[in-house]
Amino acid sequence: MGALTELEEQRLHKLAAIQQKGIDPYPVRFSNKEDILPLKVRSFGAEDDKTPPEDAPPVKTAGRVVAIRDMGKAQFLQIQDQTGRVQIYAGNKTLGEDDYFILKNLDLGDIIGIEGRPFRTKTGEATLHANTLTLLAKNLSPLPVVKEKDGETFDGISDIELRYRQRYIDLAVNSDARETFVLRSKIIRALRDFLHARGFMEVETPMMQAIASGAAARPFVTHHNALGIELFLRIAPELYLKRLIVGGYEKVFELNRNFRNEGISTKHNPEFTMIEIYQAYADYNAMMELTEEIFEHLAQKTLGTTSLPYGDKEISLARPWKRVTYLDSIREKTGLDFNRFLGDENPSFDEAKTMAQSIGLKAEGLHTFWEVVDLVFSEKVEPTLVQPTIVMHFPKAISPLAKSIPGNPHLVERFEPYITGREMGNAFSELNDPHEQELRFNEQASQKESGAEETMPTDDDFVTALKVGMPPTGGLGIGIDRLVMLFANKSSIKDVILFPLLRPPRHDTHKETNAE
RNA sequence: GAGAAGCUAGCUCAGUCGGUAGAGCAACUCCCUUUUAAGGAGUGGGUCCCGGGUUCGAUUCCCGGGCUUCUCACCA
Image (tube, rainbow, N blue to C red):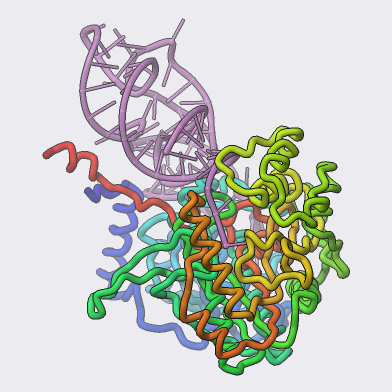
């Protein structure tokens, strides 16, 4: 393998010619580089309305060459750094011999440093007239050429696979991609600041766990050689964070990766970022307040508004959000009223099935009353929850870590916020009765025995922790990737994860395997 | 895991009812010192995703495979 394209060969020849001339195409450093945006503000005014004086002192900056307009013995270049773009004017009148040689051998994608005097061209463009031009890195693998005019982009890269597989190209070429990940970083920072300001402490709990509990999902398995044990990548940090509440910390959070060995889709990546927040002496009502505050604050802080465009919709994150109970939301959307079963100790599975069938849902493969109800909810209610909605009081049967509503045998103090038809988080008053917790784990285990695919594994040490005593506690988890999708107006989770998981490319394995 | 679509020059895309292919941008050569999707003249560039079959001949038709995207399934 490794046949070079014509373009790559040409670049290598230029590289050789540059080295021949005694110029290092990869110099060690370029000191005192000023960022382009502040430099432009300083030289040309914040409104781009100032003209620098004739004798303005030279400035020094650097970036990637993204446009070359060759006028013969002089050229107009555009260079781009993390903060913006600026035009460079360079020619043989001001450049020394070596620098001019670099100019003549310059390619799109090269990284250069320049020193030059700010001035305006005839047409008024803010420009730097280069006195020196230093090659800092030669581009040997040509980038796609993207041209822009009046905000319109021509011939950008649209090959989605290339954008995800070689994100560095996507970032180098597409300003939208760059902006998305800047926004992601701002959101995460604002979230941390928000929580720190309220007295929360950020902690780190194990990502490799002997028991992958805290959620119901298939884990990744790995192996520790020295201990000779099987370990799982965590599917959730929940049980460890609650151990910290037992230990006496009262406000903790963890913002980091979880891993689930499940399908990949526009809404699922095998590793994804979650924040989980626990507050002792609080309950799910406090978590509802917190949820609304967090979303509103993050939007205000990072986007300057609580009104977000998403696809063809306009989402308003302004508080207060609509709140509705789980069963009422089903009644609202389908007319089916499961509330009337709340008095029954063992609500009828068959009746639930009949009700589901009456609105065209097949309850095949389901075993319990509450599974049928949850099917109705996820099929008929979830997709309709476009504006922020807090759905409260989930079935106990599918909430093994949440505290029961006092006096209610079937429902728990749990809620989920929904936006754009997607679950954005999960929260509850944490179950802190060790005996009840043990029963719930057992219930999960017997569901597994009777054929449920994914249930929550028992964690005996966690039960022991609860026996030591955990104060009443409110917990909240928020999916960060989905939050960023909402804020960045992206429909695929891959657009908000820098390096989403893709099948590794197979080079010429075909020939090799067929050669046998 | 299932179905559908796609894969042609560095990029964005045409096209071949089966006779090995084209545009724009990029590249190369030349002209041009205030351009900005710069302009003008010329040139080169392809395992048409991979393998097999049918055929005189396959990028095109058939079969198998790969990768991606979308939908569904699974999925806190």
